[in-house]
Image 1 (cartoon, rainbow, N blue to C red):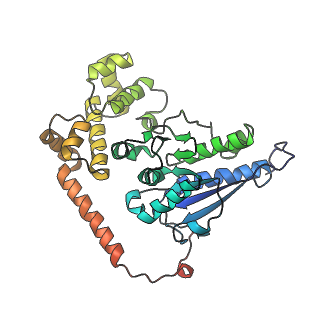
Image 2 (cartoon, helix red, strand yellow):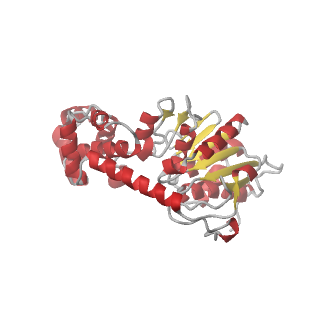
Image 3 (cartoon, rainbow, N blue to C red):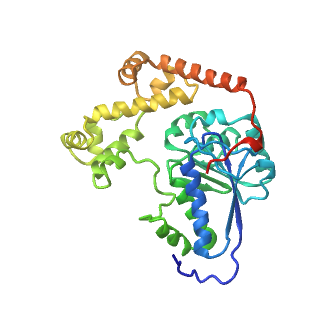
Length: 352
């Protein structure tokens, strides 16, 4: 299909991005970012962007879906870059090694702009490269990282650009970040044309939240219900009463109860409790906080009450959950340490 001319006559300035893929990175986050650059070249009708995939050793990393992409180069051979994006996914803590942290710090010392997709921000925070920066990470990991890295200014936005740091949530949010970068680089005309090619109904900006409770389940038209859920999420440590929520939303308590029963299928108090327990589980598995600290942070009056509610929802106590998680982590580490290395770079088949 022929694309409309952008009217550009002079060669546009070239930018080059490197995507540093960690083991189990999110493929949808990476592909959303790369395809935005590809389409920008097509719409601009010239090569405005180049991109390279990199790993520490130059071997393709497997994404969380099991696929790997090639070509991939080592970080030492990646060449110049306007921005290096760290691409994370699941089990990101296991993927962040001392070698990776040292490599990221060397890039920062060379004044290379750094970014992250999905959970890649964990690596930047661990390296101390997000201290006093506004930053974004996938919403499931945010509470734990706020506790672990208090010097980072975490935001619930889709993405954040703060000086030379470009951080982003997961899923298709990297597409929105790239459209913002493209708009700032090439002007306001090309980004909407990319959006049309990808059949996006609108371009989201850095004021959009990455996670709005219940919105995906009930749609945009139940504003009172969504506002009530948002108030619950914003008040985990000191839970609001249902009467307080109803007053803040501007409807009756009975109306809140009817909305939850009709569209969510449960009473609001149960929804609120489950939300707090899911937050507690994230802190339990992703931080070293004590069970007492987690109980307080999630609004429970005492550890026994917390433990009882946790068992009712997840089938085991918080201490049993944490112990099982530690045993699994140790088992994985032992398996990796004992696994024979039998493949060279030439032996590794790349799945595209």
